Image (cartoon, rainbow, N blue to C red):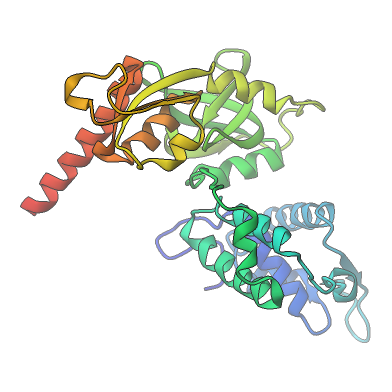
Length: 340
């Protein structure tokens, strides 16, 4: 369906619009004029005016060229003097791909970061084609035992990415990790990054007048773009690692009672594993005591809750409370489902 709105009124994400433009310019026989782009490329006819479309199209061209996509300008000929655009396929074509088993294994590992179902199908097809080139099952051995834990970025990712690109302020409602309170925030976003199993945006919090980080999964409802583009400058040097490291929190240790031979991912990161009965309550005497470091309370609680009753949190108390909250919510869903 051409246009900037899906059925149901959902705006086209900027990254989807860019991909649509690349596909169109790669497949055009000669060149596409601006009018042809606006009328046939999904995402552009949502522009409320010709001026808005012009700004959107020029911004997208600049973004693609900055990414290395060779968009060329084709002067009009004959009776038409309208300029057209296309992608230089010779310059854009990828050379023969010849990955070693280890390299293909790393690509496969990176692909696991994307749990979004829209991208998952494309990733699967791409990996199948790469594997057919000759690496085969040997790639699995190169990364055996490794498994990334980065969750889907969610609905907030697209608007925030657009805001960073356009340097526009955003507003959203945010649930604080320590208190659970939901408050409105106005932010000048600088960078989006992944750390500790989740996605974060780093920027200047206008309400507090300081640099803050926000976990995308704690954003409630829609992210709204406000004001004109170019409203602020992004610092040349944004120390994302320092900001995220401080925001995710200090390293702590989770003391867990784990059923033998279960929760291998936790065991792989453990600082200490003791055999059954070691300093455990009588009801858990048949379990191993496992000590695992963590920084993000939310990510750790999500992971532990995923093991259900195979893992019991001994300490700290706040981690135990967060895991129990998740398990009780899951049990309530099961009850409601069975009644329905």
